[in-house]
Image 1 (cartoon, rainbow, N blue to C red):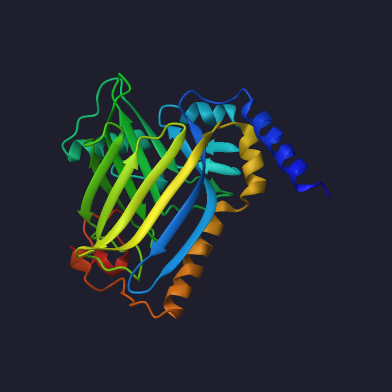
Image 2: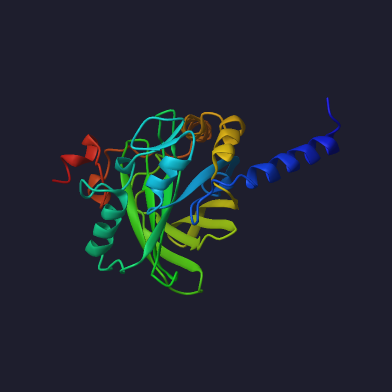
Length: 289
């Protein structure tokens, strides 16, 4: 076996070679990330894991389908992107649905504007997306809003609109959750979103607030790498069965929380507090009619 310093040097050379691959895109990229969750109350529980996210310019998806080996739009592949896995307000494309959602929220998408989506891909056809992020820019490249699209294990999703305010590159929103994300979190908890505009680094922070107390801290941080066929092939080895691993880890950590006797909330309870949900599960669809 290679000595550890030589091994690190070899991995660095491999990373550089992958970055040099020429079939990358103008705005789309990958972020190699670390996810951290730290529950503070009623009992301490902390875990973290590594993964990668796609960062896709919504105007480049078809070009990525054409250029990248192992990536497809609305077709099966090693990695695939399906419009229906995201906002589904119309039968159109993901960008058309985003524009409709923003219009319904009082925001007109500007002529010449663009949007990027940070999300997990389907892996060998399987998808589970705990959270995705849209960042919207005007024709001059200035960010004007963001959307956090939160999903759960029931196939539901809920978008949260973050207007651009405060620091130049920070979207910030504190809002009632009113969405069943976890059986160990109440529906009246508030989300505190802090989303920095992604550049060479990704920095996202989401806290759960109950009353005046922060009970759960979550971060998603990472660095930008080129979106190339070679990089996707390498990540298939480095992060095998990515989305299956994510859903497994969620259930494993839920089991550990159950062992710690964290209070449990039923999905069907308080259906009236589960508001603005897309693809509502049968447990609340009838009650919210």
